[in-house]
Image (tube, rainbow, N blue to C red):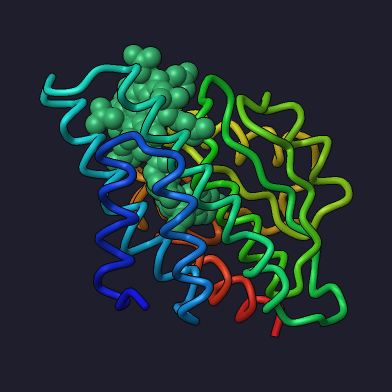
Amino acid sequence: MATKEEIITMARTAIEEYDDEMAEEAAAEALAAGIDPIEVIEEGFTVAMNAAGEKFEAGELFLPHLIAASEAMTAGINVLTPAIEAAGEKTESIGTVALGTIEGDIHSIGKDIVATMLKIAGFKINDLGRDVAIASYIEAAKDADVVASSALMTTTMVLQIQIEEQLKEAGLRDSVKTMVGGAPVTQDWADKIGADIYAENANDAVVKLKALFA
Ligand code: HCB
């Protein structure tokens, strides 16, 4: 049976070689070997995906490469998700989180991982999808305890301010907590716009939201 290091390497190679089948195989081998699926996602797929993003920025890769890499990552995650959900705690709902990728932004992989992890931690998820209009977050806030946005681009993260402002205008800001995340988002940014929580990754989102509702 392959070792953890070999499986993590295979997961990275699958992204580097845009190989959906290899990504599925790495995921299946990880499950068979009893390796934490989250570790495979974070140490394997995500590391290689971020490297692809850097190469894209440097002009060494082009959009079709990013699309192919993200398809491979999604294929691998699809194999892991049922196991992650099955291993999850079956608790009463702690609270409802309305979560979406912000207007103008179609990056959904990270948002989906956050949704899965929060779900297994006992939160009810209202997945708003991607390219979510600010008005849709405000509407969803009426039935949520947390409004969470994901932004992967510097050009779209600025719209997270709009969520704060429009929640205030609708008189809803005091009845919900807001969470922001996504690669360019930082704690400084969250503080600047007045978001309640910044989560660096899915695990951080779980820890911080659980603490909030403890
Ligand atoms: Co895309 N892209 N992309 N992309 N893309 C980025 C984001 C760049 C940084 C790449 C680069 O230039 N270095 C860049 C943005 C630059 C900027 O800031 N302005 C970029 C660009 C420019 C673009 C296009 C504009 C390219 C083009 O068309 N010319 C285009 C966007 C079109 C649009 O949105 N309107 C585009 C398209 C794509 C795809 C379709 C090929 C693909 C997305 C597929 C999909 O999501 N279904 C893609 C990908 C995959 C990336 C990179 C390579 C990886 C993103 C990713 O999935 N990471 C990314 C490079 C990078 O981010 N370093 C690149 C892995 C996940 C697990 O990490 O950070 O998303 P995550 O999520 C974490 C974490 O942030 C946190 O938890 C997650 C799990 O741990 N988190 C939250 C996330 N959301 C949260 C919300 C919360 O409330 C709390 C925590």
